[in-house]
Amino acid sequence: MTAATPAGYRPALRDGVLLSEPLLHGARTVHLVRHPGSGQSFEVGVREHFLLARMDGRRTLGELGAAYAEEYGRRLGDANWRQLLALLGTKGLLADAPHPAAVHEPPAAPPARPAGRPANRLLRGSIPLVADAGAAAARLHRAVRPLLTARCVLPLLALIAAMELTLALHLGALLDGAATVLRHPVLLAAVFALLWLSTALHELAHGVVARHYGGTVSAIGLRWRLPMVIMYCTVDNYRYLATRWRRIQIAAAGAVMNALFLLPFFLWWLLAPAGGTRDALAGLLFLGSLHAFTMLIPLPPLDGYTIVSQAAGVTALATSSRAHLAAALRRDRTALARYPRRARRVYAAYTALAAATVAALLALLAALVHTLLTR
Image (cartoon, rainbow, N blue to C red; front, side, top):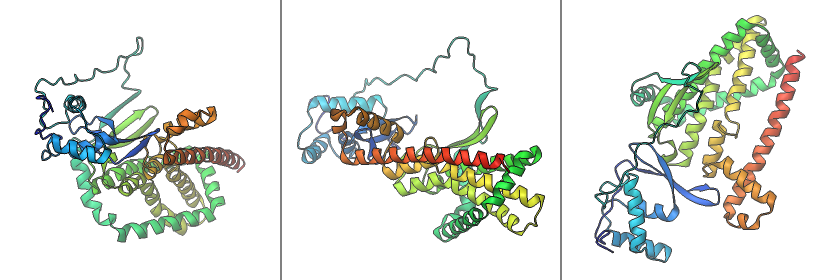
């Protein structure tokens, strides 16, 4: 080691730096690293992660180098250490950077707006609804925490399954109800308002379940792209939570909430006599169920895509799958040889799943439009 990087130096990452599990990204395996202050993330390779995960302030560079050599069969030279430590210092990830004169990145300037296109906060924008989103999420979590245990979740999921099965057996009545709702503007507005509320609860469900598993909710607010106005709930450290299964539960929480929202209306529909109210409820149940299932479609940016990505352990799944497909169609053996076996299986499987999903959606959409127009 040189004087700039003494063997006795004990590097430590800044408190709050987060490291993700290994993720496929294209042909590479990467880890995500998140800065605790700025929230910015970047990717590092498996070997860099090996070192970062051991930078706890107790191990010296000499000990880290010995562990690295034992794992990978080669020692890092002074230039490698200087490059890595300078990068970590520049990113602000070291608790005590070894170079006092380290240059920090200036704050990013806002992107320039094209001439002739002034900002229009009326047509698009966002606004926070609470000053402290973390505290709001914590209060909501305390209120519903007893419902997040397996003793409550499993029966609720069973009720949802029973509801959807019953609705599927009465699909004709639901389609008649949907046609009735679509023909009456007042009913349509009422159903739309209820589905908007369901969407708001969907977002809060993501935040509450994330909070349950140690996630941090940084913002709760409204976002509009007129004529659409939706609620949003931002979870900062979602991709860094402990287990893949927990991340899948967080992603699925929104669709589950959409279905739970329908349960009281389902009971009302079962008890309602034939007539206008029952038809309106049938329309709401059909459109609400359609909304819940839409969230589980495995295409970006829907929750189903997040679930599939987490289950496969992949980041940028759609982009990587397209790149792999393009290489396969070109028969580019050099490019394909760079993909490990698991990556080839994952990307081929997702390509087939996405193609089948799009084909099924187009067929269902055509059938649905035809059915509603003929009722």
